[in-house]
Amino acid sequence: MVVTEEKKEWHSNKELYEMMVDLSKELLKTQTMIRDYNGLRGRLDKCEQRIDQSTGKGQGGKDMWGYIVGGIGLLFAILSQING
Image (cartoon, rainbow, N blue to C red; front, top):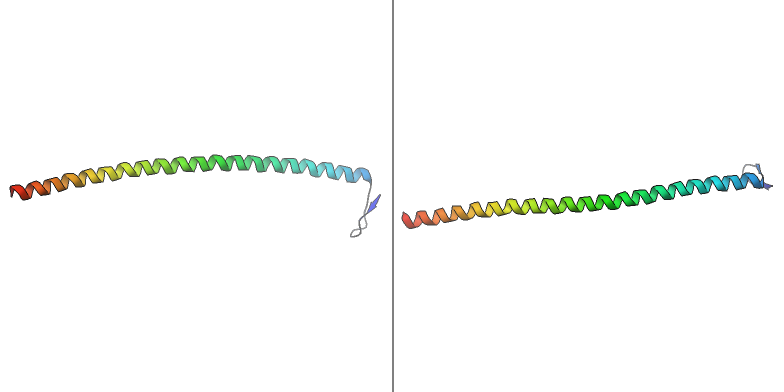
């Protein structure tokens, strides 16, 4: 039997073994949750990258239309100066 200094409690070898088994079960659960969290974190990072890429593509398309409209406006301005 083992005596803990702090609380003066007696624990048999069987009780200590059972405590260790319980703690190792909890440790396995914790490791599983951490592994699952890391997997979800990786999936979230990939989703964020996809969103950033699609947002960039959409912004590029909007910029393109701006340049087209600006070019047409410049063309009309030049034509009006030539004809006017």
